Every structure is written in C-alpha cells, then in structure tokens.
Image 1 (cartoon, rainbow, N blue to C red):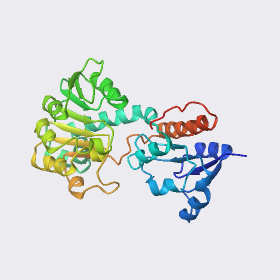
Image 2 (image 1 turned 180 degrees about the vertical axis):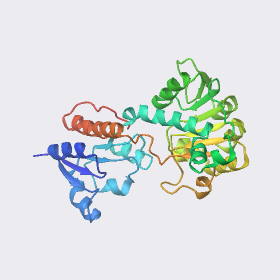
Image 3 (image 1 turned 60 degrees about the horizontal axis):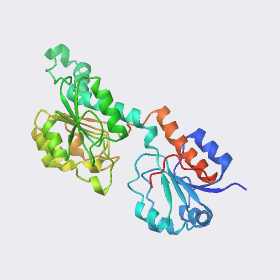
Image 4 (image 1 turned 120 degrees about the vertical axis):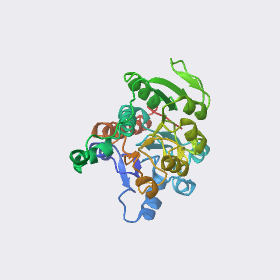
Length: 312
C-alpha cells in the first residue's frame, strides 16, 4: 500500500504527478471541507507537504498524531510553530538551496533599479516627458560604492559575489564572523553607517523582527539605498516609509512587505521605491527545483534515508 501524505499546498504539475504515483494523497489544499479532510486523513499521515506561509500550529498538529515530517516547498517557514515540531520530534525540511541564484539576482536588480530610477525613467519615456522636457535628471552611480549585507548566508554570499563584479566594496553583519575577505560589523547600525547600499538577506522570524530600525536607516543616510529580499518583518516598515518620505535615505527596492499581498498604501505611493510582489524566486526553473527538492525529501524520508535539507 502507498503511504498516506497530506498535501496542504498545491505543488507544480510534474511534482504533483510524482506524489500521486508514490503516495495516497489527501488533498487538504483543494478540499471543500478542510476540517473533514483533516479529521479523516490526519491520523493516517506520517508526512505532509506545505509551503512556508501555511499556518501550522499546535491545534493542527493535534489532529496529526503520527506526523513525523513536514516537507516545505519554500525557504522560510515563519508561520509554522517550530517549537511545537521540536517538542513532538517532527522534522522539517525546506528549499533554501534551490532558490539562491534567482533571489540574489533580484537583489541586484532591485539595487540597480532603485539607484538608477529605472521605473521613473521608463515612465518618463512612455509619457512623452523626454521629448517635452528634455534629459532625465542625473542618478547615482553604483560602481565603487560600499555594499552592506545583513546576513551572509547562502543568499547573502551569492549577492556579494555578484556585486564584486560591479566593483563594490563588500561588508556584512551577522551572528558570527566568517572566513571571507569582506569587512565584518557586529551590528546592522555600524554596517549601515559604513555602507552606501544596505541589503537585508537574513532570515525572518521573531529573532530578526525590526532588525532594520529607524536608527539603522538614519545611519545609512540621505544618499543611501535599502534593499529587502528577506522578509517584511525584518524592517520597521513605518520607519522605512518615514525615511523615504523625509529623505533620511534616498531610495529602496523591496520584494517583501509587512502586509502581503496588500502593502501599506503609503509605501506604494512613494516615487523613490521600486516594488516587486514577493517573487524573487519566481522563475519556472527555480520553482520546479524547489518543489522537486520537497518531493525528494519526502522520498528520502519514506525510504529511511537521510533528509536532503533538514531545517528542524
């Protein structure tokens, strides 16, 4: 008999076909009556598949008494009660390794677009203002500037590698100093004061909430640019909006927001911020790789092999 699997997030077509071939899939993601589906299938499932935005709390876990593995199709998992998983001996896998390149590319794209006012320049051409008003205002160069990266993990390191090619000096902050040829700062404020550009590439969660504070943004300064490809909670969004409104910093590029998918309207009206809909990993290739990694972790679990990317 095929093992039972609770599917709480809809995978891509090819990966869903693999799951249906290998398991008896209980489709919580598409169920009209989710409570009934969970009540019937929950006790039978040793594993479940979901994404990092799924609200996996203690009440949900109570209905899956035999759960041993949560395979997540994304990198982050802030809405999953990790402490509850640890207490119950439930393992969790994620897919951070699969999305490094595309997220790092997006960080660079947002950095350049913000500093060179790409969105405003595009509108300037389309509106006819170029022909009516003449040359677009001068923008700010990137080459030779100082880039500070908050969180030099896999994604932060990939950003650094790309930005070295632009002639940027690299600095970073994090929990520990690493064996890398970059300047180390033991806190984001000192890093921001050194930097012309500050990129948040750290993990989300309670431990990094408001890590980028009003004080950090003030240290970055009126010619500085801030980029966030981590989580919306990492920055004090009210402080960021104020900093952009009053010129405390020059510009920002954001892929993530405190309220998704409906960001604060004060933020979306600002001309000096480039916005992207939490889609840094949103390429066909990367999403296929992320979902395949979740499927491969499930296969390893049911075969009794070591998990590929265990996070908890």
